[in-house]
Structures are given as structure tokens and as C-alpha cells.
Image (cartoon, rainbow over all chains, first blue to last red; front, side):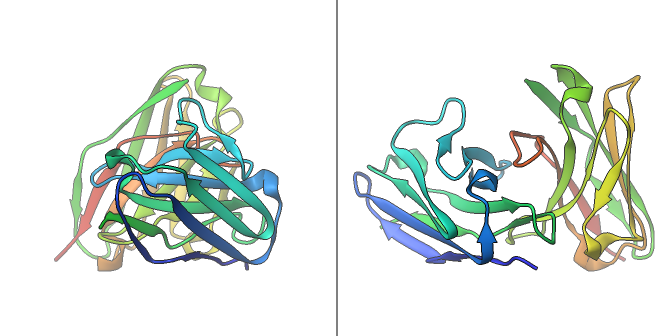
Length: 109
Length: 116
């Protein structure tokens, strides 16, 4: 069973700073099948990145994804006030067929 | 793309069953595999299963095997998720989401509360 572990659990930063969020898989994940989501309170998640590095439609270019194998990263180059939220990584392909990391909360410092 | 409208909140007693739905509009209903993902209060996301609206085939997470049933009605462009033998730990927001390798779009979710 693939387990996705996100770190840190909470990241405290200020607007304008750079955020780096990590997602580590217990087994290798195909880059094609690694995605990132943003979730704000009271809202459903929103797809940010698919295929490890492809921005979804309408996602600003300050969001970027990278990585392969077992280590993946979501980077937000310059934080805007609306970027403070919870971020999840998700994989497809191994038991369970789909799974999520436990999330990283990005909070204002 | 597809827009999905969830059914309303439910309150159920332990041991009961609940059936929630998402009605799709916009793009072709059968173009997107549909998933159910739940989120307990203050917790993360948990994938429950997938249904192919075109043929109706399903695949469920092992955790929910035997307790969950996903169906669809192509005449009304609606997908359903029924969860039986409810317990307090099933209290959560239940989202439908569309896509295959990842979840391109999400409904607003249905809150299911299990309480005696």
C-alpha cells in the first residue's frame, strides 16, 4: 500500500515569501499520476497541479510542481493572501487505487 | 466542463444507511469518471470509490467494500453513493469529484451526520 506523507504539517510564512511543500511516497509513484490540490475552509478541494508539474486550467504561474519517484514538491513562488490554505498531494495507481497525503496547512505568520 | 450539484445534508442514526447524490450538468455526463471522497470534520481527504457513468462499472476502496454502493442514472445525469451500517465515524462531508487519474472538478459536498 502506498502512503503519501506530507511535510511540514504546518508552514507559517508571510505574504511575498516562497513556500515549499513536500510529498513523499512510501513507494515509487509515476509522475504522470501525482497531483496537488488546494482547499480553503468550507470549500471543496481545487486541482492545482497534475502530472506532477502541469498547472491545471486557470492556476497562476506562481504555483509549480516538481519531483519524481518518491519525492515531489509544490512551490509557491511569492505568496498571495489568498494562497493560505491546506494543500494535499494525491496519487493514482497503487493500492489503494487513489490516495491522499494528510495535508499541509499554510498559515499566515 | 461538468458542474455538479450535491444533495442536501442528512442526519442518520447508527446502523442506518444513507444515499447521497450529485447531479451533473454542462458537459457530457458520461465523459468523466466520478468518484466519492469524504472528509471527516477537521480531517483529510479519503477516497471511497469510482464509477464509470458510461457503463456503470465501479471500484471501491477496500475499507468500504461491502458497505458502499455507487450507482448512476444516465437519464438524469446523477450519480449516487449509498453507505450502509453507519457509525459515528462516518460523520463527514461526502464529495463527488470527476476525473480519472486525478480529480478535475468537485461538488460542494454533502454533510452526513451520524448520531443517536
